[in-house]
Image 1 (tube, rainbow, N blue to C red):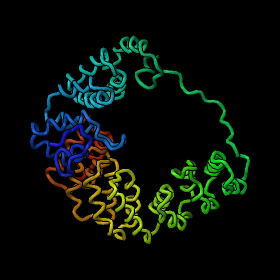
Image 2: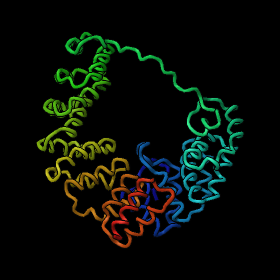
Image 3: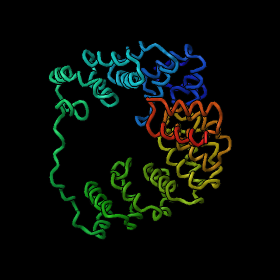
Image 4: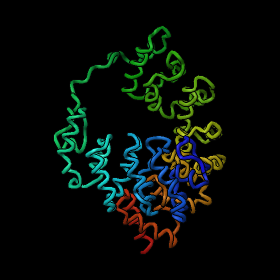
Length: 405
């Protein structure tokens, strides 16, 4: 078996690869052999396999531990294995405690009293638990905070009067160049002798004023001196231009260097391009696949979805991304694009989504999984699970009501 801590993902169709990715199929397979899946589940709690911090795993892992009836000992031990591992363990234990796991509740309370990274555990408890479950730890929190002073915000610090000072809001400073009209700002941007600082300031002011088509021909020159990045306000300026930037974006998307200009052009085409731009967007998706670039194809998939059946040439790539990506937040967009372009065979995918780690995926499953005894059983599970997000519980309740008349 692939080692859980070597930084590599298992094959997308294997149990370890599925659980690392938070796929619903992984949870279903694990339920068939809880003892055999235990080591992998503990490994996923102990090692952060999220591709990005927006990826959701806490509820998915807590459910695996609970539904497979796994001993909590290895999860509790994770509290003492460093700051990041401790935060993941605390998140899972806090959820399990809500479901009635007394061992999880006492483990977290005990760790707050003696553990090294107690602050994260306490804040997790205060974020999720009823106040009466943690409010009696005020004296412990006060004593430990005095030995480890730093500014903290949110609960429980506000409730206990231990929060740091809030931000000081003074009058907003007038931006440099705010008095210059757009004609003057465009002249400044076109002057190669102007400093990067002043050009950035000029773009910042234009961004505040709304669409300015005069920027379009200047865009290729609005990068940093080393050519690696665009001047930071440019993304907002181009966003406001919308479809006005499409003709130029076709040229930007065709360049090899600088990369930022190509990516900017591709983004404009994804959001505002026409069906004539589908081959370019499919090429973007193909390049992302070859390079295993997992952050960003979501934008391209969302763009392709706008064209429905006119983007059929993207179907194979979208299916591959949905199956293989470790970036679970983006996975939902691939399914959404497939639903718009070619929904053939998605029925089983929607069923799998009922077990997915991502809330948006579960919502898709609740709304579109075809009616069956298994689906109804899972809908009841989602409706009644105290750990589930309120929106998913409500959607499951509504779908069940529709199915049962």
